[in-house]
Length: 543
Image 1 (tube, rainbow, N blue to C red):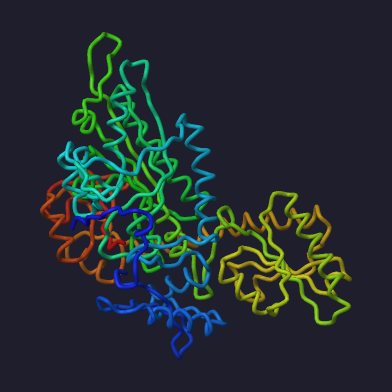
Image 2 (cartoon, rainbow, N blue to C red):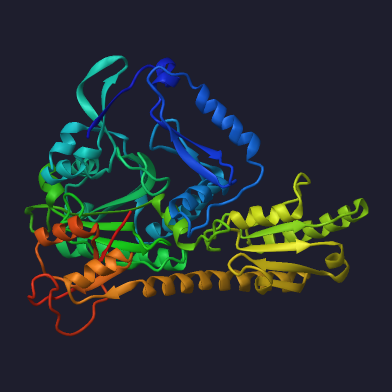
């Protein structure tokens, strides 16, 4: 489905209530769990129903209660996003507003990846959001793959455009247009750039962070003189993504090559990192494509080699998006809410001062402020919640729900003893609580850093254990179907055709997530054909 957009003058660009797509809002049911529902409005109806629901939600949502994971995983996910103040729904169906706390996670992702990109010789730049439709048509498989998701602009400044424009779904085409103007000689290669941008894909079924009409990402694009250099680049970037997933997000992705059916439109090969979510569905968390010469031939992107001959460049593209935030939520979260790995948490430590009597307030707040200053000076991301509108117990639950890794509690007795109480988000109850930790700066900083490292490691180990328990090695198609029906990932030898792969998808709902780089040794027999197989593939249902 191609969606055509008309760009009108600014004064008329705001949607009236009658033109709104079905919106999303939140209400609190009698069971006091925050749920979501779509409000379907008849054409020409007023916005009063939406306003009433929003008003009721504001007035009633004094407590923040989250649907249990075991009851409804999707409702739990939406509750966490709303209550942890990560994002909200935009007025256009399928769009979202990323709130400051959610955007801070994205900034942490940017900070890590930006450094890695620059260390490997890439430079940031920016390309226009509007792409001539003729560019998309130049690479046949590319236009075929993206046509159902394109948003088109046909009117600008109140006039019909001579050529319709595509709102950027990805940038291979416009990048090649510019590369053709910048690349002339082998001395211009390699050309390696990255951009942080928004893209638009008109998805029919949306889910905040995981699949939205518009999302944020980084997309890298490189041009090389040889096939080997492009292959090295594609593998290097998927390795960066893999290390990021393990070391920063504590998500044990499986890295591998996509099947031909699942390869990016216009690429020779696509490499991927696949993550197992808490409901055991797969999330494609990042991809790196060896584009070969498909786009350079379509756009005439050539260079003169050392022998004076004209050659087409070899190219790559690679990307990670705000979808990764959804992956973090669904990998680590629990019934209490969000659980953030310390390396990406906007707030690593929350300090909760506790007092009952007025004469205790100043001494407790002074101590809490001193602790905050000590931790902040050591580079720890810390926040002091000294608001007086909520009780300490409410604050405990609120910051647990927002996934802050460590909580520091300070009361009058703690101040008298020169110590604090520290609680881990990943270990509930008394087991995760440590008493009598010295307030002395050097001791406290060392203890907090040690615990943050421990939480980061514990989250990864827990996720690895969950992943490995839910991957099953199968030796027949019947076993594959049974495993998929139980919500597992199925790993099996595979050398069957694209048609057979599509049959599996039709009959089970599962796709080949990847052919893992880590392959078992020994002879293998394809479960579908009985023929020898060089590799095992992983099948799973996915987002």
